[in-house]
Length: 422
Image (cartoon, rainbow, N blue to C red; front, side, top):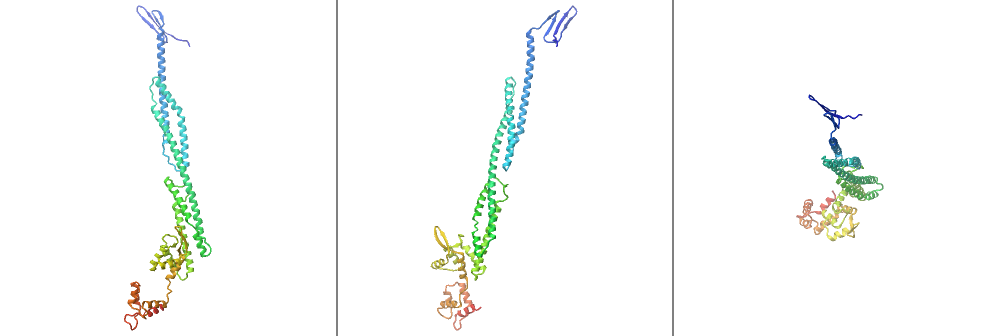
């Protein structure tokens, strides 16, 4: 392309002034019919002005690019804020792992923006160095906050994972223990239901069924249940069994064992002691149970004495020692000392004998004769001196007929004969 020059010239005459210019740069001027060239310094100034203008435009563009980059990074940080601050509401290891996977993706995205953030810092330094005042404070604040939130999120997820792993271990331990108890209950119930042999053999089978193992297992399960409740675990994904239902089943098994043992004992005693009715044996059992304060299955000397006193039998210490020694048949160890206590079977035998009416008419008559000092009749004074309760004395006074020919005399022979021949 052919270079053009601006030529400025003037033609003067008496009447006219002519100036002609050709736009270009540098400027060539024709004055008074002479072509002149501007000084070199003027050309340099013009070049500098143009360069400065270009530089100013470039700085403005850099400033706009800087602001755009800051805004773009802030928008990204806003977009990941919720994923770094949402509450961790999960109740399983799998749930935490899903959150960890989402966090890992977010953290990788954040790390990928590290270069963008460092460019913003470098651009800010360069622009300020070139005299353009810019600030990255807001961007830095948001970036620093996001990094801190990411670190906090990681710690929170690690803690949640540890908690759920612990809860899962507790849940599995509870499920394993609950299954063991469930199997024990089923097996024990079957053993209780399927007893075989004679009554004695069945009773031995029932008594050999110890419920202590089940109760011990329930205690262990209760501790695990408390740990789960403390940890806030409300549902167990590893089992449908729970402590209340298992406890109820063990209690039901206990009642069934006690009931069957009672029936077998009653049948055995009824067979051995046919003179006692089933109702009497049941009554004896209740009495025995009432005075067996320590639930040992036997009566010690003091418990047996309390029982006799409640039945209206006032016995001396010597008489009690002799009676108790003859009845005690169960070996026990108390404070390291081997003793014998009164078992239920001997207690029943004694109670049958004590409550059975085997006294003969002759024995009754002889007792009255002793009270009457060998007289054939007895008086009210004789009865009152006997030491019998007032109610019993009043009953005899009302029942015994008068003795003929003796005022105030009572015919005890006639009364005994009538009582035994009803």
